[in-house]
Length: 202
Ligand code: MN
Image 1: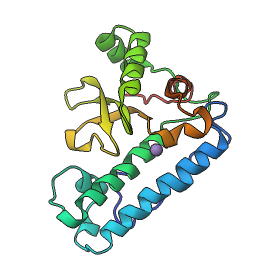
Image 2: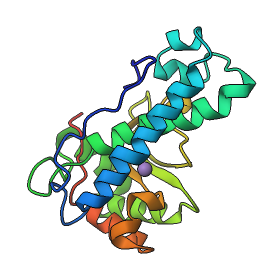
Image 3: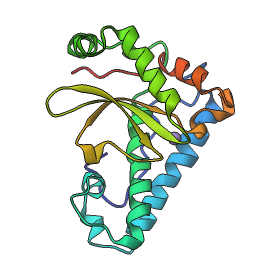
Image 4: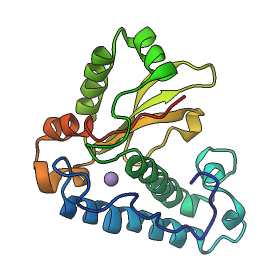
């Protein structure tokens, strides 16, 4: 996604609308992917439409701060570009309860054990951070260029791209991600996410 350029298109959901049950229901996925994610794509394209020079830049170049963005479009590009990147990661980072790598393995598990003591301690800390996001935002497990892990929260649709961090795990803690099924109970949504979240192989 970070190498994509204008015009951006909505990536297909990599599983069926019912496939993440019982954690996320079909209505939640339809609204989240087809309405919210689509809106970020549409609004990013609309923000770039008047600027042919920005249409030549990749999403990474739009988000990483390396190219000055016009004041009139900067907020719209960063918010919607961030929404596109974060949602692409989020949906690709989930898979049905019965498939995927819902536990880290190999080098990533070693790094988690070294950094946090155990997977359970990592999970508890990550959950605490995700619960602490006030308002709308995201919680990431990231790795930096030195191979060091950390847990990072961002506000709204801010990404970890300007910090030059690579996301390994991402939880969307906007209410739109869970409100239809969990109402105000973010903790129950996060508990469920651990059973459908995928860990990459390092
Ligand atoms: Mn979302």
